[in-house]
Image 1 (cartoon, rainbow, N blue to C red):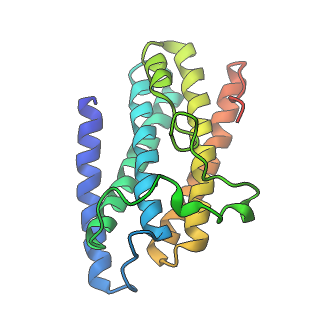
Image 2 (image 1 turned 45 degrees about the horizontal axis):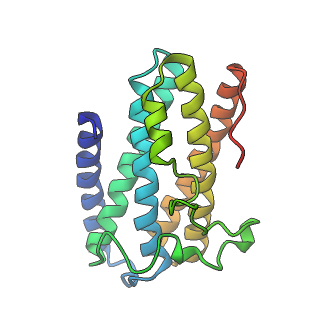
Amino acid sequence: MTPKVVLAVVVALALGLLGGLSLSRTGEGDHPGDRSVAAGFARDMQTHHDQAVQMSWIIYDRTDDRLVRSLAYDIARTQSHQSGQMAGWLQVWGLSPTGPGQPMDWMKGLGHDHGSEPSELTDEGLMPGMASQEEITKLEGMRGKEAEIYFLQLMIRHHNAGVPMAEVARDYSQNEAVETLAQSIINSQTTEVETMTTMLEERGAQPMPE
């Protein structure tokens, strides 16, 4: 983990804890249970976000393209902050950072309204959209346009899997703060996918097959 990632995570955790404590003081509803949609979303989306932050800092140091670096910085900053928010919630709710069962269990049976069942893990046991360690290593070894294309392809796939997670959290969490954050994630990542798709086309490339 690079110093930039460490600093971003520390700042995000601090911000998230403050946000979570503020939520606690308002007395908004009962705290979600350990197997709730809200808790599962907070845990799994943190993991999803943390990898997006990691990939963003990798490309930030491997290209001179101003627009790609700006996009990567925005993703890293936004998702670090959101990850910290979710870590803060779990502390306020009295729940551990890791929960019972497998990742994505909280989504089982709840994805049909969104056109698919998005809760299945990959053959490597990763959440949908997550890059494998081999893919991360490959990105780290690239530079310039080649790295830009691969980053954009990985991040589009990553976002396209994160949006259904956020949609389920928005629709089933029964927690206003979670619903608000989930809708923000849906909005930002949908827009970013459109932007990244255009950036890929400008480089003569297409997204990875889903």
